[in-house]
Length: 221
Image (cartoon, rainbow, N blue to C red):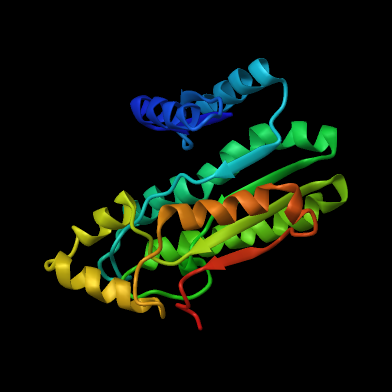
């Protein structure tokens, strides 16, 4: 198993957490916007284990803004990570899966990839793209035994959401508003999202492909 991150110290810390829980993992630096780095990571992974059975594309960034406040540079930055990043990493690992005629890919989308969210123009644009990319890949590669799904979380208690809150004039008020969006009246927990990813990656989900798996606390009802 490999844990990757733009920050190598974070990747190493995640690998240590996995090892502490009884698994075995190595940490690697990965910049999903850099094709050469993606290729180098693929060579390192395949050179060590010879194969990759499950790929989870979870890198992502966000932005608060409407059409009038979002710049082209803002949109390009989100697209480079949220969409092109999924493309770049999948591109270097998919061929091996197709050769073996087995594999599972899980992409991180969002409830914002299925419904519009105020002040999230760039984010929703890219997450809708992730859902479309997922469904297209699923149809293309189902005959070759490779399953492709994505998860669509609502708001989750993560550093990612904390960063978005800091973009508001009143973060505490924004937190309450975001929490109340979910029908259950709270944000999700990271382990709740991880459980869904684990299911989609497992053999128990052998009949699941092309799914945009909603984990939104009843946001959409």
